[in-house]
Image (tube, rainbow over all chains, first blue to last red; front, side, top):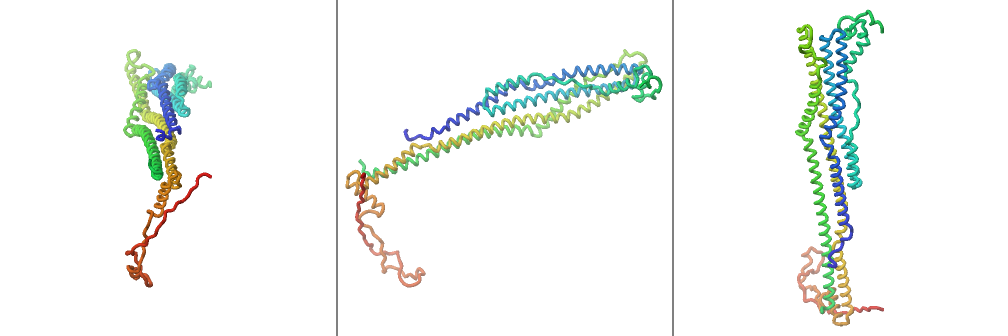
Length: 206
Length: 276
């Protein structure tokens, strides 16, 4: 009817359609970001943890073997290869080994958590960007780029000396001339409290 | 064909009805827009409430206790594996050792004791760290989950704002609903008024019509043409003023009336001239 309508040309319908389209784009963009980031699941983080463990554990084993060898040689030279002191030093080294392994387990978990935080930050930034632009295409492309970049393994720092308790003892014994053939393992014994320190021979060299 | 006066009245009535219908249409349209927006906002609110309920459920004591237990268990498993892999540095047991076997047995016992002490210490430290770091792991999980929930809430808030922003436009537009009818009503009312004036002015050339117009006008102002009665008070039926607590003398009553006086009100003919 000629006079029945009216009021339909104010653009409200178009504005409503635009708003619905905008909301649709935001939902679509968020879904695309989620799809790109779906690769970062629990298995991915377990992988990060395992990657660090694989990186650090051989270094630890190497350090442990060397330290154990040095200890064994040192004890053998001093005639303490089969002794309570050997057992005590061995126990300490074993304890340090266990604690170092725990430390690596912690660091591995830390690497996984760091990766999780970093990935969540990136995702958060992308969603923010999407909400600012309402452009799902750009969000998807940025999400893909970020996700690929985040998938790349970053390097880990090498381990420091994890057996300083034992290597410190051995260094002190060495400094005291324990391996110089002079006073034998007197210095070593002195260091650990066996007998009296020798005052003869090479102990006076330094 | 109906006379101009009737036509004038009919046009005016039709105009008023059209304007009322237009106002009704606008009101309904505005109510419709508001109702639709309420439904949309309710949907967003429901989604938001669901997100919030999820967050609150995750933070419940039972779930947090469970999360803490799982985080601790995970850490403990890591530490237990670390301890198990920590071997003694030297093998001091078995028949491969030369010399006095009884002395070897003592040394082996010493080694076992040292190893037990070492692993006991590492185990105790591992358990303590698991409790400490398990809590940290739980908090990290909470923080990430809350961040996700906040992100969802932010998006829902964005949608709510966007939708309510459009409502203003929709209300404006709804208030214009029935604008056609409103215009028609105005036109009809105006036409009715003009027809009435025209009838009174005798635009259609008919004296009768003009007379009829005058009659309409007179009737509107003075009542029916011809004669009218005006109440007249007489002293005969008046009551003493003292009955009403009035001072002085005299009578006052309007309860009874003497036969009314009759005035003749002649018809009059207003004249209008069109054009120059």
